[in-house]
Image 1 (tube, rainbow, N blue to C red):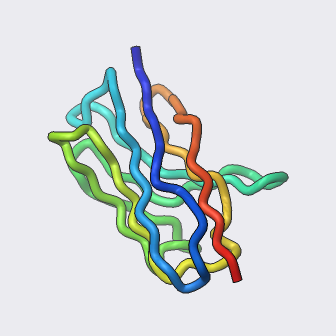
Image 2 (cartoon, one colour):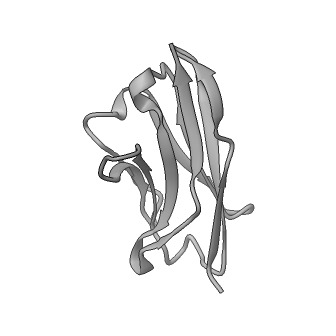
Amino acid sequence: QVRVVESGGGLVQAGGSLTISCTASGISFDTNAMGWYRQAPGKQREMVALISRGGSTNYADSVKGGLTISRDTTKNTVYLQMSSLKPEDTAGYYCKVSQIDYWGQGTQVTVSS
């Protein structure tokens, strides 16, 4: 059974940094690309960062200023490092298994002014 669990969200002050994690079960990073997406209430879900099965990364042009997506294959975990956070970054952040469009439950990131 596929399972992805996001963690690490919370409240951070504007300009601060935060790293969120996605731990996956039932998949392999050798065969599955992963992505981070975010969605604010009443808004469309949007792509933030992607990491391919080969480890290459891509970022949304609008949010690539302070982002790093990485993975630890030994822990089957994908990370999203965020810096210089702004209130408009407030959203639920979701981990996606690309090939099967499987989503985690999300972790909330709230950036205060």
